[in-house]
Structure formats: structure tokens, C-alpha cells
Amino acid sequence: MHTKTIAQLSQGLKDKEFSSVELTQHYLNRINQSQLNAFITVTDDMAMKQAQAADEKIASNNANILTGIPYAHKDIFCTQGVKTSAGSKMLDNFISPYDATVSHQLNNADLVMLGKSNMDEFAMGSSNENSYYGSVKNPWDVTKIPGGSSGGSAAAVAARLSAFATGTDTGGSIRQPASLCGITGLKPTYGRVSRYGMIAYASSLDQAGPMTQTAEDAALVLNVMSGFDEKDSTSAEQDVQDYTANLNDSIKGLTIGLPKEFFSEGLDNEVADNVMAAVKEFEAMGATVKEVSLPNSAYAIPTYYIVAPCECSSNLSRLDGVRYGYRCEEPKDLEDLYLRSRSEAFGEEVKRRIMIGAYALSAGYYDAFYLKAQKTRHLISDDFKKAFENVDVIMGPVSPTTAFDLGSVKDPVSMYLADIYTLSANLAGLPGMSIPAGFAQNLPVGLQLIGNYWSESKLLNIAHQFQQQTDWHQKMPQEN
Image 1 (tube, rainbow, N blue to C red):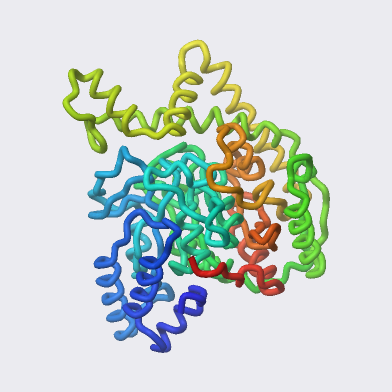
Image 2 (image 1 turned 60 degrees about the vertical axis):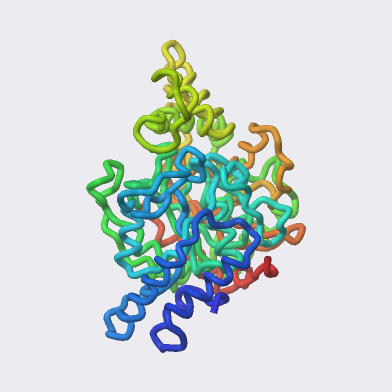
């Protein structure tokens, strides 16, 4: 059963080939046998109750297309009555009293939550080595990283421990692990999916999205996740279309833009070869290719690593040992409570980003750093606007390399460079995807698609058509 896509599982449930209870138990068994450390919390009892309720709806012909489908939920989404840790020691004892909007929408669709997936602490990382609960392992090679911060979600889907998973993308945290684990990952336009109840890292960049086997599955899940939410001030009042409606449209006449900046020094040759082979596949389907330029993309990393730390410094200030979360033992006074609670509970990378942000926002440095970064962000956005005047979609690599060894990158700046091709889309608020496009060194390579604002339907159509012609998305790692 675990080899089936969401669409196939939905049909199997409808045809009574198996029940949601049987399907859920099958996935729970696989999770319990797995050595990947992809989950922080496994919600066995809750999952079985949700599966039983789903079977009742299916029996009464009151089901929707996703009723009874099991999934993994990134542990950054608040889930009522379940620990929501954001991969941190700080929130190791936090049982959420409410559901995030995404959690609520998935519950309303009668889906079955298998558990909360592992992640980099507060979504800060590119390798999933920053989790308080230990590193997640890549199912293709357990000595490699799965990518981050949604590494647990990516590993769970790639190893078929769940039918799909939720993820969040602040600087590439859906697309990069999707690429390194060989699955489909979609970051929607900023504001397309509610951020309410999603523990904030950088509020102007964070966006939730689906991580699935196929583009068709991603469309099915995005239909449920999307929509305006009055609880989220950044949520867009944009109608939710049926993202499955145009999947089978021809892409003949599509104009693909290849940014010359994405194919420069630093890109692994085998990764580049796989990306170009995928582009040639699109040309065979009737697409044309143009070179485009994103001249300010070179500034994406320094811009992101000013904007994001500034916002995280503000967002994480609420975690002070007073309101909720970790509290140090026997504080001498209020200052000692603040100091020790935060220093004991935050990991090194989170502390680093908080300090960078606090410094950049301090008096005398705000204009020199934060304000300048926001101006540069505007230039990066303008580059995309100019490019989309001549092309329908931008394509390129997701990551400059395949998955690297666990523990091999010690320098934080070297780790930041792994996001060089993904950050620009977040800074501009554009939708982006990673789809499986080949292998290098026996590890998956992803092709990145970046679309204009609100073009998720077009991206899914392009990805689906590619997956009709290739079988990279059907490849599965050996059992781990």
C-alpha cells in the first residue's frame, strides 16, 4: 500500500480494497520499524481514532477525496492536545491548546495524522542536524543529510512512511529537502496558505506547503491547505482554485527561462547535467528555452541572513521562561530567569541568528543593515518581474550539490551557501517547486520551478506533464 500515491490510495479506499484503519496501521508499523528519526512524536492512538472515523464516512458515502489518507505533520504546526516542539528543547514540554489553521483544514478534510515530523530547531537550518531530537537520516543513504528544515517530512515521504507530509519554506526548507530526498515539494506564493498557528521563524518569508510523491498529489493537498484566513494578517484574499483542474493541459508553447546566475561556479557538474537533461525533456514536449538574468540574486544570501535573523530575533523574544516553554531551575531573579532559560534551551544556530538579528536591529545599525537588506530585497523582486515579462516559468537547480555527509559541514556560512538557488523566491514571495529529475552519485537531484505570483496551478501542470514523461518520482530508496 505504501508504494501508492494519494490519488491511488484514495481510489483504493473508495473501492474498499483496504480500509483507512488498515492503511494507517500499515504506515504506523513502517514508522516504528524505521531508523531514520523522521518523527518527533508518533500519534498512534489519535491516528487510529481518526482512521475509524474516516472509515465510517467512507461507508456512509460521505467522504471526500482525501478522507482517510495518512500524513506526517511538520512539528512547527500547532496541534491541539499534541506536543508541538518546533524541533527545540525550548518547546519540548509545550502541548498546544489550539490547532493551527493548516491543522484545522487537514482535520476538516478527514485526513489521518500519523505524527509530528522532525525538523531543524525553529526551522533554522539546511540539513536537519539542528534538531534537539537528533539528526534525520536521508533514506537514500543514511550517512547523508536529508536537507532542512523540513527534513523529517521529506524523509518520511521518500521512505514511504506517510502518504504525504506538510512542510514550511522560509528560505528553501520545502524545496531543498524535497530535492535531496527525491520527492515533490511545493512552496506556494506568500499569503496563499495561512500562517496562523505555525510557529514563526521569519514572518515575511515563512510559507507552508505540501511534500508529496507527485505533482498530482501536491495539487490535491494544496486544495485543502490554501485559502484566506482572517486570523492571519498576511493571508491573501485570493480565491482557491481547483489545482487539479489544469494538470493535463498541454505545455506546448511554454517559454522556460534559465537564469545564467544559476549555472555559474559552485554548481556540481552532475547536478547541472541532470537539470539540463530535464530541460531538454520539456523542449521535446514543445517548450522553448531562453536565457534570463537575475543580476541581484548574488545578494540573496546576505539579504536573507539579515532579514530572517532580524525577524526571528523579534519572534523568539516571547520565549523567555515566563509565559510557556522551558524555564530554568531556581532562578535568582527575573534577569537570571531570562538569561538562563534562553541560554539553556536555545541551540547554537538559533542563538547565532537571534544575536545577528538583535545586532542588525540595534540603534545605529538598523539603517546600515536591515533597511539596506529590505531595499536589496526589492531589487531581487524586480529582477523576477522583468524576467516574467518574457518567460512563463524559471527553471534551474534546487541545490548546488546532492546530499552531503552528516556532520561534514561545520562552518555556518558554508551551510548558508546551500540555499543559494532557493532564497530569492522567498525574498520575492514567489511560488516555487522541486521535482525529482535524476540522480548524481546515486543520490536524488531536484529540478526547481519558479513561477509568477499565484501561478501554482501552472507550476503543478508543468510538473505533472514532466512526471507523465519520466519516472524519477517513482524511484524508491531501499528500506531503512
